[in-house]
Length: 235
Length: 235
DNA sequence: CCAAAAGTGTTGCGATTACACCCATGA
DNA sequence: TCATGGGTGTAATCGCAACACTTTTGG
Image (tube, rainbow over all chains, first blue to last red; front, side, top):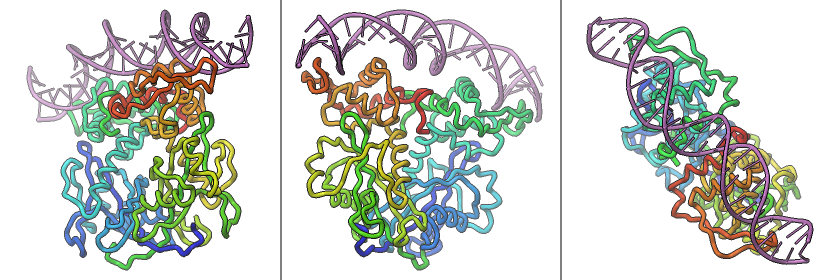
């Protein structure tokens, strides 16, 4: 019961940052500059201070270690095994972030020692960070089947081929181009712009933006985008 | 960075226990026997000890405060606002449990001061426990749309009308009896027994059990049980 | 014999899939 | 003019929602 003396424990945050570059889903990692596990790759982590909330700590730590600010950040899970941190007993609350890589290229580069790795091939991480990444991947697939969160991975304007390669990357499958675009447009979540992106092809692809007003209505249509008997590996 | 001195914080567990009695979804609460907030209703809570994992702590605390053992228990979310506990700064990791009320009636009664309240009408709780319950409700609806976890709320054998009133209670809507049973049976998740439950009606309703082998296959069929344009309040 | 709950079938409609060709353009 | 990726249409099938009557039996 909580009226007894309370034991105190170190509480940390670890951030899994997912990024999309138009083709691949990537993971942001940093190389540790201190012992133990010097030079090994790890997630962005730090301790929660007594005078800040856990959510605030996650924002601060992500910012301190990468320069990233104003990105989508959501709590994933608390990891609480006794021996998970070899230094000292630490409970870690993991968060995941979703960002458009191109947009934050500047913020990231110079000062910070963070690097992007393909989600399909990244180095082994310290402590239980591999487990955290695994869970975050599943959660992303899970959540994206029910919410348009993954648009956080795209620029403010994006083309249909871009959206599709994002979904292809997140679910590691290939959706049928025709059915995919028809379904996606039927959600009324997208607004077509006049402008075209001429980088990807000679013909150029029209840009779209997200219609946030429609986020709630028609949300269920996102289901049929993802949920079919054949592509539910993430369950 | 984690090489600096680590601040230590009290880490607690709070358990949201959902129960089903064949008709209503209920919530298990205890009345505090100590200050602050003496006699107020609260979730089952306690501190995490340095030598036990967070998951282990949740099991221990639930057991200590209710006598419940071997029930389905899943981490919900870490609550980390600075002022959430008025006594001292405490990070609480909330778990939710799903149980069949009838089965654990004995275990619960006597020694413990826990009581069941209808999920639609329970007293206001201490600290941020109301918020925890809200989130747990949503999570349950969310999760049950994708997994057959809610069978944890039923006895080992159960009737179709019982399952349906469980889903009705969880989603606070009424499914069509005919479509519901057809869909549910089509999942092949249920095995019909010869025995009948004669308590609920004169005709009696056949018992079924869950076919755990089929948990993974056909999981996607659970979707169409729940996911329709009209019943997605939980999104 | 009647009340009360269990159980079951059909049909029309809308949604989904599978599939292949034309378009626009820069080089 | 041709290679490259963007964009679109249709037909057949399947699944879903809506809907009402029969069965059983205890009292």
